[in-house]
Structure formats: C-alpha cells, structure tokens
Length: 243
Image (tube, rainbow, N blue to C red; front, side):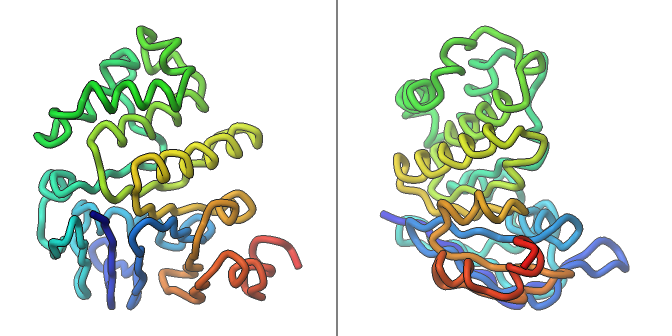
C-alpha cells in the first residue's frame, strides 16, 4: 500500500504575523517532492503545520495512508506520527546524552513500529554503517554529518509511510550534503516512502526529486511537474543558480 499528502489553501502564521498564504501542494505515492526556498520563506512553518505543531487558520491537509484518508488539521502531533508520518526537523533534535542505539529505539515508540523494531534497526545499521560502528557512542559527541544520519535513521525506526525532512543540508560540508541526499533516496526506495523535503540547496535537492515547488514569502510561486521543469524555470535560475 502507498501514502500520499495533499494540501489545499493553507493559511498559517504566528499570532498576528501571517506566514503561509493559500499554499497548495501534493506529494504523490512513492515520490520525493522538493519544497525549495531560501530561509524565512515558510518552509519550516509548513512542515510544522503538517505535523500538528502549528494549527492553520484556513485550508486542508489530507494524508492517504494504506487506502485510508485522514484529515490532519486539528490532530495532535502524537496522533499524526501514529498514522505513519515521520518528521526530521531542522537541527536534528537528537537526545545528546543517549547513545546511538538508544536514540534509534526512541524512534520506535508507536505500536506498529515496535513489532518490526529489530528488523528496522538492522536495516538502519545496514544503510548507515557508521551508526553501527558507533552504536554505543553518545549522540552529542558525534559530528554533524553523523548526527544527520542518526536523525534520518531515528525517523525510519517509526516505520513511516510518509517522511518529512526539513533542511537536511544545514550545517554540513558539501561532500556530506551529497551523501545525505543520496541516503534519503536510498531510504525512500528501501521503505517505499513518499517524501517531502524542504531544502534551499537546489543543486542537491534536484538530484533526487521527482517534482517540486518553489515557495517565496509564504506563497507557492512555481510548481514543477518534473526535475527537468524545475531545472529550466527562470525563477529557480534567478534565486538558486545565479542566472
């Protein structure tokens, strides 16, 4: 079975400050969708709306998971995670005083994930051999790249069907950014996930994106139905490629 996400007419902000304006997008089953935008344009706010951390003032957020449709607006973050939606936040937000293994096991708290916990742990260690080597190391003592690997693996431990990733390239050296993006594709294929990835590194994001959107000042200014369409868009060339 598959998972998908559809957002329509979303409005949200913080108190009297409006951030998102009539945002609509979709994440089809089995695809990686890039949400492209520079800092301060609403990418993280949109992710938090999907996860129930911010309640939108208007619009709908619908997730279809294994043939069942769910409205996410008004649900708690815990209920959304329990549906099979995982979130890797910007900054990783690990438990620094817990070991690698302990952080991973913390990700497997939802009931359906516990049944396949050992299977998913084995898979994560296969995909991220460095984590297997450092399974007893405290997360807070790891490098930025290793912590990003751990954050991705922890999300996979919840056995998700839909994966949200916010700015995976932040704070990483260029080579580590490339490796992280490659791992996201590997995880998506291995778990047959739908992925929404918020990213400002266009060059890296476009390598694995099936389609994408450009968000500017809280509005979707362009929708690319393919990687080629994104690559040939004038707005993207202006803001990301310096053309």
